Image 1 (cartoon, rainbow, N blue to C red):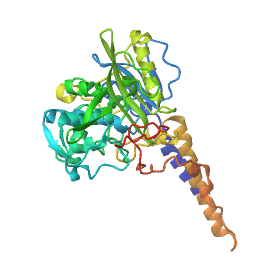
Image 2: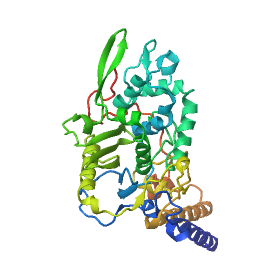
Image 3: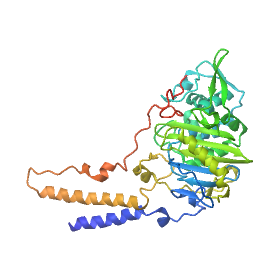
Length: 428
């Protein structure tokens, strides 16, 4: 019993130290946290303005001034979540400038062989010749994974493109992002954040082609021979689809959906000479909520948010003279315990096991379970033959599953369909 007590005290001391908030164990300053120390905090961050929309149910969101890069308000800005097709913004940031929009390419079977089952498709077919402009229209308007894969193969292949995207993310200082596929489809370990997605949009909008594609409502797409069919942008604030009104001044940028990532969206709008960027990730409600909450944040930014003082900044790319900063502290296990998707083990930086009092309680419960288990084993060894011990798997800590590895994200879902929409995979 004394030995168990000594082990328990040592475990408790070690685990409690590991559970201390980062600010208590490793002081962080604005110079060492990407975008500023305040953006590394959990919860709503806003200064100098009130009136934020009340019904914001997203797991993460951010609003920023596109020109200055000032972050006006944010909620869990660096929370690492699956990005779905909003990751295609990074794909465009990486590949768009490599090919002239008038260049023509005849698609081969091998270009489409690795498109994930259940992907959103624009309708690219082998044997048909497309211009680069048409392929990018397929990427931006219909979020076509088939168009993404053709462009990736033109760029040298999927693996090389993924490596280039990761390097581009690092140059943009999007340090929450880990790229596994160029299209944003669910894969274990593929993560980003509201902060990073906003960086991708801001960088992309500097390019005239990027800006033009993301703001295009409809286009004619080749169907073979001289035939075409019309494609429409899946950005509902741009087109007014599914019962939504178009947002006055909207200029893009990109939406996404998978069953694991939920609905994600980064939008940009200009009013009175000012352009604002908003990213919303995984609202609790259905597919329209991501647009409704984006519109509400934009309304706030153009209204009461005009008096907001910056809570952080969108940093500049290293290649453009941006000052290098460190990643925000990860909170992967705490998010998993709260029911959020875990970033997996393939993220760009290690996460702390726990954060704050809730994490401490979990770890102390674990330590207690170890002591109880040892005591029961000792009692079992001394008990008469025929006695048995109840399974420890019935313990509350084990039932919580807080530290289990996330399951593989291989459900067949269209990237931009809402969970309740009919025919949401956009197959043609």
